[in-house]
Structures are given as C-alpha cells and as structure tokens.
Image 1 (cartoon, rainbow, N blue to C red):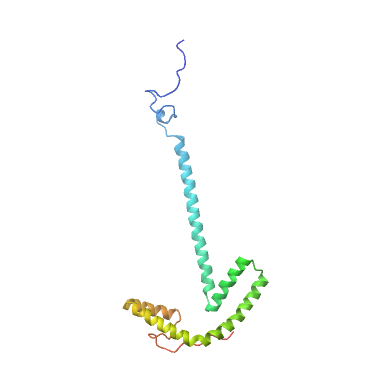
Image 2 (cartoon, rainbow, N blue to C red):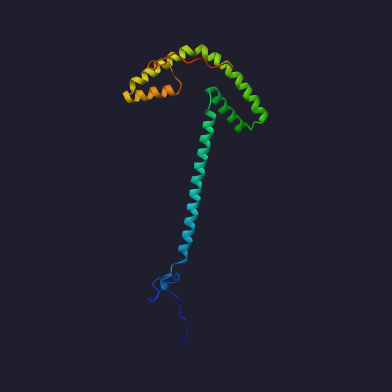
Amino acid sequence: MTDEIAPKGPSSEDPAGSSGGAARSGKPSKNGGFAKAIAALVAVFVLGGAAGVAVGRVTAMREVRRMMEGPPSDARASFRIEAMRRHLDLRPDQVDRVRAVMAEADGERDKLMSACGPGLDDLRRRTDAKMREILDEEQRKRFDDLSRRRGRPGGPWIEGPPPPPPPPR
C-alpha cells in the first residue's frame, strides 16, 4: 500500500520542523500576539504604580505643608497629634483632650525658653558667624537671605532689633 501517511518530522520541505505552521505558511505566530498582550499588561501595571506613587507623594506633601502653617508650636502640635491619632487610633474626644494638654505645655515651654533665650541667641549668632566664614561671598548672601526668610533676625550681619516675644496663650 502506497497510500500510507508519512510521519511528520523535520524534512527538507519543513525547515522549522513540527513546531507549528508559522514558518511554513509565512503568517505571524499567535504566540507573538500573546507576548504583546503580556507586555501591554505589564506596562499598564507599571504606569499605574508610578501614578499611584506620584499621587501619594503629592498628597503627603500637601498634608505636611498644611501642618507646617502657623507658628512652630502649632506645627509641632499638629505633627505629634497626627502621629498619635494614626498610631494609637485616638477617638475624636481624645484628640481634643490631647490638643488641650499640648496647648498647656506650650505655655510652660515658652516660659522655659524665654529664660534660655539670651544664651541660645548668643549661641546662634556665634554658630552663624562661624558658618559664614566657611561660605564664599555668593553663598553668604544666600545664607543671609534664607536666615531673614526663616525669621531669624538679630544675627551679626542682619541689622535691627530682635523680634517681639510670642503672644501669650
């Protein structure tokens, strides 16, 4: 019988062997479409993750900026209260009571700091003067500008009276 079916295998007519019809027919393999789909899925995942990180960072920076508004004592209280609220799961009534305790402590802190103020001011002036010696002329100008903007008048290079004490609470 000559009508037998020859077994499939590598031959001169099938250079790709029995790996599929892509090489024989000249049509693209379906596996290439699968790889593209996987690559697109990975790209969407990576871009989504990057967008999530960016949104999280912007949100966190806004929160920090909001907490930094106002006097340093308010910023310090906001940071501490927020950390306690988040880590200890404080109830709203507890947050109010903690805020009251911190406001009371701020008054005491102001009294203690006012007694130390002259010594701390002198230390700041001496430290700033030493730092200015390290800087070149352009850096000193920027340092002085930063010091003014941060509300640190009274340094050896900034003329004017010291700032008034903070208002009583």
